[in-house]
Length: 93
Image 1 (cartoon, rainbow, N blue to C red):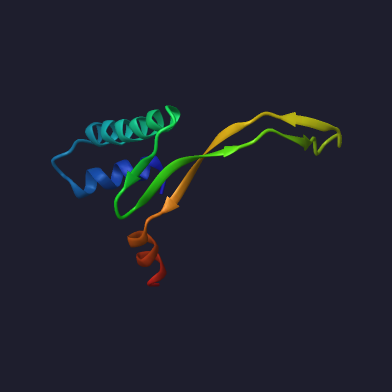
Image 2 (cartoon, helix red, strand yellow):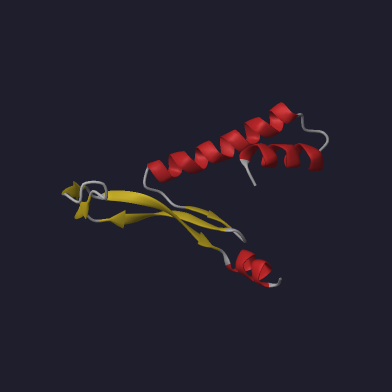
């Protein structure tokens, strides 16, 4: 499901919401989630899952085009962990 599909679905399920209101609410939720992760925080949505950061230490990588070694600096990578309720719901199929 894309962001625009989510906005359409929200507006469809809640007729009192205009599409612009649904769009704003989705934008604010994604923005809040992103800002919290950017600050190094963690976001947990009960029944759905949690978003966090995984640390990747610096390493020597390889350029696939030339084969030469390249230094890859340390970085944090966003990570999603599925919640128990969602995992069970998906596995019922």
